[in-house]
Image 1 (cartoon, helix red, strand yellow):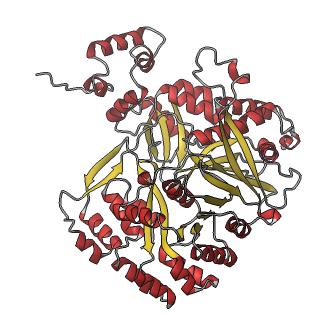
Image 2 (cartoon, rainbow, N blue to C red):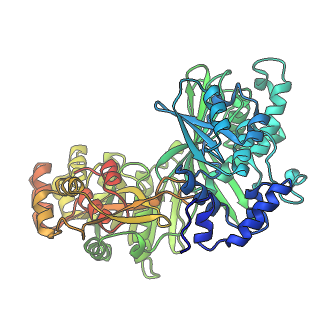
Image 3 (cartoon, rainbow, N blue to C red):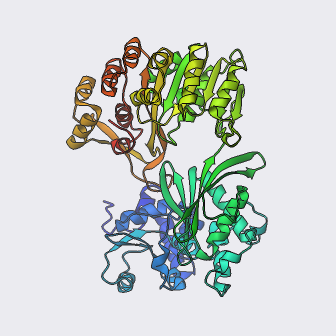
Amino acid sequence: MNLKLNPTKFDLLIENKRITQTELDTATAEARKGPSDLESILLDKYKVPKGEIGKSLALFHKCPYIAYSDRTAVDVELLKNLNIDYLKKKNWMPLKRDRIAIEILTDDPGDLDRVTDIKRTFPGLTIRFAISLRRDIAQFLSAATGQQGQGPGPGQKDAGSTRKLDESVSDILGELVNEAQEESTEDAGNGLDVNDNAIVRLTNQVIADAYRQGASDIHVEPYGAKRETIIRFRVDGDCFEYMKIPANYRRAIISRLKIMACLDISERRKPQDGKIKFKLSDDKEIELRVATIPTAGLNEDVVMRLLAASEPLPLDQMGFSDRNLTEIKEIAAKPYGIILCVGPTGSGKTTTLHSVLGFINTPDIKIWTAEDPVEITQYGLRQVQVQPKIGFTFAAAMRAFLRADPDVIMVGEMRDKETAEIGIEASLTGHLVMSTLHTNSAVETVTRLLDMGCDSFSFADAMLGVLAQRLTRRVCKNCMEQYVGTPEEYEEIRQGYGPVQWDLLGIPQDETFLLARGKGCETCNRTGFKGRVALHELLLGSDRIKRLIQTKARTEEMLKAAIEDGMTTLMQDGVQKALLGHTTFKEVKAVAIK
């Protein structure tokens, strides 16, 4: 019987056949004799993946494993009174602190001397351990203190001057920290040349990293002369702290961004808007929409929206339910009428409309679009960038289109009564019109347009469909697991869906009631979510709905009629996608209304 009475740190590696027991024994003996530690030997000599070693250590010590990532923020305040060389030598460091405990990274939570040392360093605090490899701890410390990275490949040391957008942010920060320490005055950064090499490289690298991580927005947030400036990214709808830069350099980096956006760097008292065209490579260019906002303490925030020009997704890949996909294709093929896509900012309205346009984009159809800005380009579309500053508004663009022999007109947004009325009029005179609106639901859109002053009879005649949309986080495909939902979850979902409609689905509360969740992995940065999934609510212009619009019926009445006609609400569509394992009900609740 080969039962192992004393488990070891690397049993999981042997169990998964990443390494044999003989190889492990040889590596252990080599580590005892030589200068290299066991982890390094397993990584370098036996080519065991870092993540596998981390999982094995986490299983043995019953602690979560945290690998090094640029996206993992280190609370630099916790390191201020600690000797960094000592931490690297002892292989531990404080990572973050919350109301409950302080999280400590270490490669061995079972080392009693080290645990005693940690408790002495943070007296009276609850300690929560997490496993990290020695190399990762060294990288975390280097990134947090701005020192030179711990493991550059051959030839990388001198490559900083030649590499453009693949540098380590830690290395660039290291240069800034060293320079900052040499400054004698507290706010010497105010007089820095904004074209200073390190500032220019750091700014470029932040934008490149944001694009590579799939960020939709970059937030630069100065906190005055005594605290670091924070840079945050928004990825999949959630913000996270990307990095901190020395306070001395807050104005230099803000000024550099303003120069890139062609803004007035001397004007700090009022907001400014601009755009940056940023070249990632010879064949890849992105555009950033830049907004500067004066904040407390004579500071200035910069928020940048990444507008990566891309091809439209096919309509079949947009995540529509079977009913919604069939109906969307049907109304998009109509020769005239109006189709609206509604939802909050950043909910994917323009992306959806471009997919619909891609579905009908054939040589026999003339399509004009007015957008601000043109984010998605399509061959065959004649796309126009509106310029409100010179009077070339959406309404002006639509008037011009009507003189340019259109079949289909897409206008970026119906912001006012004038644009809405021109759109309705165009749809009644033989054109298919598509546009977006900022409303909460499909039915509410009708009320909004009527409140704007649009004629109820004209809109009722013109309306083909109103599509409300939301984006919610998708369960990470790499670490997704299914589980049987609890009775409490079953009832919560039933109430959210609507008890009457739910009971018609005939879904039993037993072991077949499966839900999905992400366990958390390196791919999703241990969040359990990666990417987003769209929720839809499609209100069709049926005869019944048209009559209700003409009589200016109440929203509740129209909603009831739409559901009876077969419409699924945002919440119901979200529940169906949660049951399919695409997302969770908690995420659906966060973005959808009942």
